[in-house]
Length: 475
Image (tube, rainbow, N blue to C red; front, top):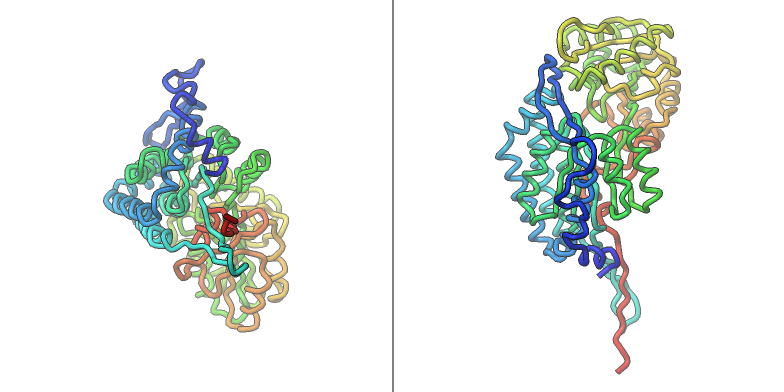
């Protein structure tokens, strides 16, 4: 046994300390969710208490040695059962997702099915995850082997709560880790149902869910018994997690915010480019990790491009933003840009009526210092900056503290080659704002995070490698 496994094996129920006793003081806080569509009450859940966090971590530590000893094939079989349960509950998960976050029902279904598919992929990949033999002395055996890290804390976002969670949870579980999962407080019921479905397919204690806000997440990530923290969410939250992990020694795997640029070269059709830009900026009201956040268009096609983009915005009815708090943040950024000299071609006004809707908005005359160009706004906003050359566009697109993704629309092979080589981001898309082959995995750069968050490489992140040198004894 490793030291951490020994400690886990000696944990008992008595170590909870507060197992059956309520905390002193006030009753547990509540998370209350209102519909982004009309503001009506959706539901409420009690937040996890410090005792719940303690219980979840100790339970995971107790379960971890047995789960590690479970064969990879059996761990994969459990993940396949979990995927089946997710598919069986497709409609309920999609309905909860739509009710809590405003995500359109069809897109919510796609996210659920993508999550189930990811679980099935890791069920197949997990048993194939292998080490290496080494060529040492003739009488010795040398090899490298991947082992679970231990207790993994998984903290997931609200904008695609099933698909993202299934990737991180699936990879962590199939490699023999036990997991404590905290979904976003903006979709607690979706996260609770998903976690319960996956937990039911595994032995007791292998997966435990928590309900709560940043305070609950902070208590989880600050615990020195957590070996790895996997987080997808805001850059601010990611920085707090990194600070906590620096004190405990936990490995951090995270995808934070992005400020993804779109470059429109002079040789592309402006109408087609505008449709790509509208898709990238307005899909799911701009609440996608790799949404288009800023646009650089060559001056020779800027006028027809903007005209077509405004037409596309006029024909777009985005779903609501996740809540009023987020809508205020989006509107504040648009207002600040207008006060700094940007021109609102369409949108940019708070609509009447209930809910947290915001119109598709196109801004021109934008400058690099504006928040709509320098920060992740995460709304249906298309800020446009006219540039004099491809070099100009490439330089400004690269000048960002974020490094998640970028898109380039160009007919030039030379410009496409330069773009993917020079842009300091994890993913570069040429002539399509969305898409990609299955299994792709990239390292985000800068403030956008660190580590592989997808693909077979995620299995490497969830494990630690041990090297073994074995010689025969002298008898």
